[in-house]
Length: 391
View: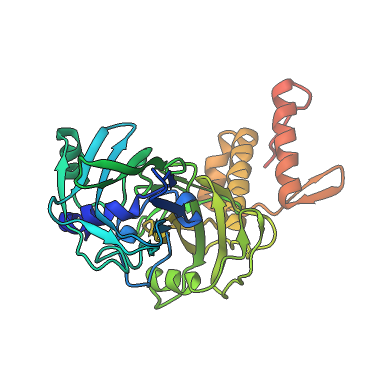
């Protein structure tokens, strides 16, 4: 990991943060730099991606350095880099070691990027070595990073200078630029809120269209929400892995290119930290069944999209028909208690089944019967009717 190789990292920082255009002095040297959109648009700077990687990673910057004199060498060149940030101030100064300069042939132009600058400037024969000097706050900053693979959200300014003769000699080119305007705070810690709870909790919910919510570190992060149905003999993890092997069906409110597996209920990309289960376009949740869900954060970094999975939660959708039947039975019992009074306990002990109620020669069943009982109770309480119980 890059934090374990401070010598290599500090050397590479010389090249990785050369941003902008250096203005030539006396027309001797031209320094040009073009930063790639990959790094400009990153929400996090993945420190590992800044290391040279033998053409295997994304190009983050392009650097060119040219001797404008077509007949004379440009000798005794030295690099100096100062790295600062808005929150910390000066972090680090990197100086090329005295007595170990590099040179450019007449008219020579060299090109470098993060994939080919691991051993210095391509095309330059001399080996470039550096000495590093942390400020006290810079050293604390470095130590606090510990095992983190991403730089904290901040504005990082880098000043690059090229001298001739020594690091304190004649200044040939200098430029300051910054990176970090789109960086977000640490977003890797997030947790689920609802519906359901941890695996094994046997949480029951009543809504067929639950509102999925989670606590995220930043509203700028995008998430993938996956909901699957429980299947016998298959673990929640394996079900999730199968569902995530296909593309989402929706992406930030528009149709995606994916499709749902037979047990995959929902698979969408969303902004923010919540999503209401839709009434169409997905598979409906069914009463009495168990479901698993998780979210996967997706952060655009300089090394590509970095994903981090939440834990898996579970819930069961209540048997709504049974719940409604239980509720109706309870209402019937309460209404009969009010109507029968002391006789209700006798009836209950003897056992009974309530099937219908007949009023004025008209028979009412099910929910209508319960409604009529409630109306009788209300009218009795208001004195509009009298209830007489005959043997």
